[in-house]
Structures are given as structure tokens and as C-alpha cells.
Image (tube, rainbow, N blue to C red; front, top):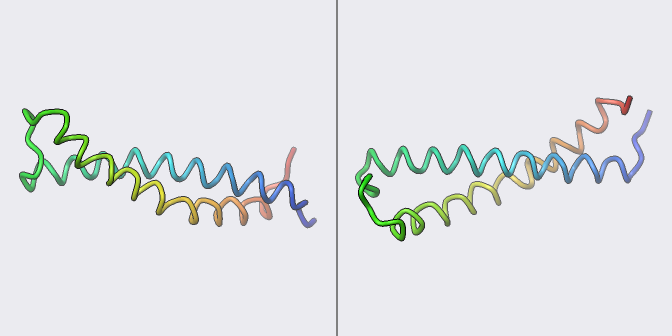
Length: 83
């Protein structure tokens, strides 16, 4: 059964959002860990330094995950049927 275009679009949007949010959380955590180990961030650094490191990294991780999440959601709409 071929899914409708509305269903493919809905699943693509949900897939993109879910994967982007997950990538932002895990990517931010990864960036903090690497930043602490490399000395770019220190635990007693001011919040501006943390923001200067985390904000661009989180945007890059989330933006990079959007097309992959959309593709995964699109293909998932072909596999799983609505119950």
C-alpha cells in the first residue's frame, strides 16, 4: 500500500524534528565533554564562554540532522502502517 503524500510529509516532519532534537541534545553533550577534555571549556568558566561554545555547536548538530531525519521519516512512512 502506497502511503498518501500527506502521511509521507507528516512522517518526514516528525522524523526531522525528533532526530534534530536528539542530535542537539547528544551533540551538545558531546561538545561539552570534548571541550572540557581539550581545555576549551573549564568548569568555572563564565556562562558567556559556555554559550559561545555550545550555541553554534548545537545549531550545527541540529541542522545537520534535519535532512537525515526527514529521509528516515519518509522511508518509515512506507514501512509502518497507521493502526
